[in-house]
Length: 225
Image 1 (tube, one colour):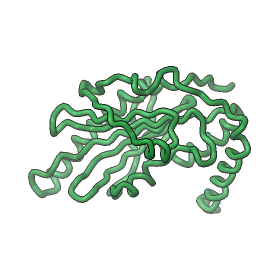
Image 2 (spheres, helix red, strand yellow):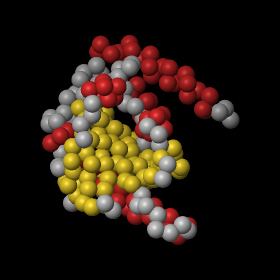
Image 3 (spheres, rainbow, N blue to C red):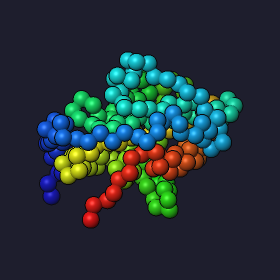
């Protein structure tokens, strides 16, 4: 059997070439309402806006974004970032947290996926455990738009190519939920497991509330037959 990974660079090159070719033909798909109008509380926890700097927004290339810190007390805090792109082309595409987190000083300790529910159907999202010095966190992130939720960067790139060619639309949102793991009380495996599981539960609660909120906020997408 041929190793399919050997063809990935060629596929990604084809995606980039296609987007360059089709950039002038794409239809921008703006949001009906700005992301700042999403609910100010998630899972009952109030949030506070954390604006990006002009440089950060330019680097991210987003059309719109929301970045909030949600805090009830020192032991119940999390952040939600949403970056929306009304169209994507070469040089203006979503930046994967898989690449951005290490650049911000976070090291990936574990990575995998989590299965959540959206309108009664299962969806898969990325689940990471990350560390930066003594700080640790659970991160869930996914790509949402054009009628689907995806976690695989390869699938996202392929569907971006397909939808750009067939429909002239490439709008998409990156949603990232980050929940700090509570500081250690003791130094044993049981304590670590309990602290991590608590952060994972909170991250999944937040993500399952964000999924339908984003579904309603994104531009409509009629499936082709």
